[in-house]
Every structure is written in C-alpha cells, then in structure tokens.
Image (cartoon, rainbow, N blue to C red; front, top):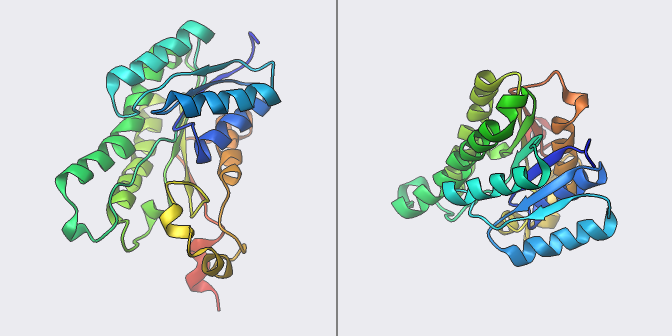
Length: 252
C-alpha cells in the first residue's frame, strides 16, 4: 500500500466519477471519493472495497465549488495517505437549458463557479498540499465535446467547458512538470446528460458512427490513461471521446 498512488475524484458518487474511482481502484490506487452526499459516496466505497479489498478508500462530502469544504477533503487525504498523485476534476453542473438570451444571473454564476472555478480551486489545493513539493503528479479535467461545438440549449454549459479546455492548457504551462490534461466526452449515459439521451437514445445510436452513446466506463478508461505512465509525454491536451459525433457532418 505504501507504493500505491492516491487519487482524488470529485463528483465520485455516480456516472463518470464513480466509474473512474472503480477504474483507479482496479489499478491498485488509493481512492478519495468526494461529492455533496456522504450516503452515496459510502455506497461507492462499499462497492470498491467489495471488489478490491486491499485498496485504501476515503469518503468525504464536499461541495466542489466551496473552498473550505474542498480544503477539508485535501487535508483528510493528506492525513490518511500522505500524498496525492492524481486529481480528477469531474464534478460539474448544468442548471439551465435554453437560449443564452434567457439565462439568469443565479444559474449562470452557479454554472461558472462549479464547472470553471471548481477545477482551478481543487488544482490549487492539491498542488500546494502535495504536488509542488514532490515535483510530480497529474491532473485530469473532465470537459465536454460541447466545449468545441455550438449546440442549442446548453450553450452556457458548453462555454464553461470551453473555458476548462483553455484552463487545462494554461495550468499545464504554469505547473509543469505536473501534467494537466483533459477529456471531452460526447453524450454519455450519466444523470447529468439524462435530458439529452433518455428519450432520444435510438436516434442518437443511429446517428453516431460507432453506433451507441457512451458509457461512463468509456470515459473512465481514458481518464486512467491520461493519469498513467502511457501518457507520460502528454500535457496540456484534450482528448475528444464522442463515438465519432464530430465527424457526422462529413458522412455521406
């Protein structure tokens, strides 16, 4: 256990976050699970422990955009495991669906605070607590293919993900040799994206070149790649994982 990497995953109670925590545990990593509700985190922790009993697991509830709560998670991780090797900035929100002309300040601020400021906050905390002193570590940001597209209804959410793609590059430039990369998922079977796929799945499956919407595990495997040695000469990059959605317009 002393040689095991320690990974913090935000938004770890379900979807891509949960799948990522399980994927890291399968690699023998210690996992620190955080989201707003401790009950769902404890369920994920129990699932990890049942499958991988030798893995260290820590749960800590926190709102990902609240500095004091985020700091408490990082402090607890350092106290339990002594170092943090990987940060997965997965927590996100989309409280508004509709045209930009109708979004209100409250929901706009909430979206920016979690999707855009949140990853910077967590990276600051983890970098200062562990990575800076050791000169090693990796950060993986969960962006969205929407960050490089225009789409009806979710334009403001996509704008925050476009900002996260740019922040990934900026953080990589500022923090090197700490590596910072991002994954940009297409439509994945998650609670956050439920409004996009729940009543539309057959249509989407027919349109996507690879024939199906994504599963959380599809993204989790890319996240573990970006956090692992196979990507050791990559930083500041964003990998689009969308089942071929971006090439639809070029298909005959």
